[in-house]
Image (cartoon, rainbow, N blue to C red; front, side, top):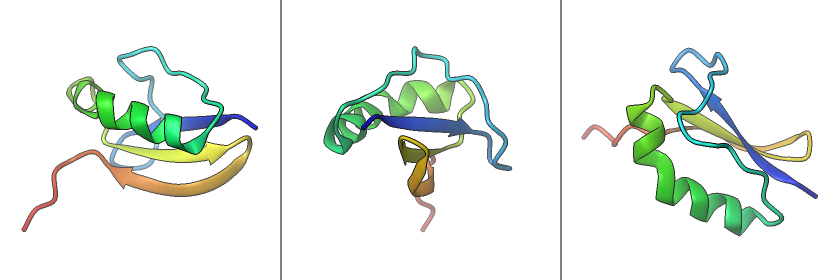
Length: 69
């Protein structure tokens, strides 16, 4: 099993991340990585991400923007 992120603009179109994308062996590793790099991704033009296990969508899109109250 391989865990990967899809990097998207706000309209859902796929975009290239500003940092090297990785493949992960566990969901926890993938989520830790996004937690460490989300600011760089956001600054580089990524608005949201979707997590996949192989070709199966696990969840998303998840916004990288801070929640508005």
